[in-house]
Image (cartoon, rainbow, N blue to C red; front, top):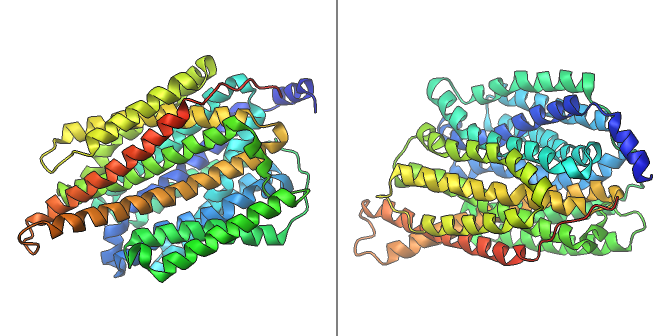
Length: 479
């Protein structure tokens, strides 16, 4: 299709109703992803489960996303936008309803998997739809709106969840989400339009199996290592990572050789897409490891309640959400370079400050640092993502969004697992150096030492990103 035809097609879309349907359902999907993290301690007591078992409520969610998102590129070409949207939101509603009524851990686990199927279908659909209905010069602002949802929802999740747990019960996290999801479904059913072309490519079962084993193995391996049972030397971790790596290599070889691949890896031929991918990967590692470590430090290091910890992280999340649309407009005007490089510089400096926090650090300092970290992230994430996807030809959009969303889940699993294991080994190393390791007074200091090491690791990752960012160039959209 020529660009004239594409532009003509763009005019016929009811852009705002489509955007509202996607953003509302996306917000609730992302909200329930982090809201449960604050409830884990509460769930361990109520459901009589160990921390390692409770961890599965997060790991299982990530694992489902890691398996489903790579297949989304194929689904986007097999089903219409309306069909996928209705299926995604229906899964979210069913999963949320089961979770709200769940009497046991097993039932809650099933609910989380069904919820993740909904989110796994929705995220790639959201990005793909934005790329199709907005012309390149307006995509930054539209992606900024998605950034607002993707960043604010996880930020307010822990605060609202903390409030609900203190006053009601953990079930209310899901009861609160349910009406909004039903509203999104009604709104989407009325206004959602079919924006993508259904080509129904041949389904290659072996590719789906290899992709599921590959991404599933990597996410499972890293998540299990982060749980702390035997750590990296545990046979479960080694086997999962080995299967994941081998399956991914075989998957890559198969995709390159196929005429109609499941995920078209030729998208990597476009340098700005690959650089954008590296930036997003680094951002997700930094943000998810920080979002895990900071609440733990606030609760275990400073002895704050879950609600208080959530409240302290709220300003940063809201600032990030507000900055996303602003960064989107700045990206449309100036391109990525003048946002990404200063953004990574801010992130690296903030993480350097975080690497020297102690139990004596003031609450105000932590709030300011976290807010600055979020400003830096908003300067990197969306510009790098949009610039990368802009370089792809129109027919590669489903593949590009599938690759980007899959690697975000993998980055999340890798970032949190590495952060937790660095935190554990840092605490252990500190305890080996003290005169009386059995003295409980040493525990907060040992935990703080581990937290500092984890932030040093995050800072190194950000510096690597800073070096890479100097190669980012603005994409001139030809299609």
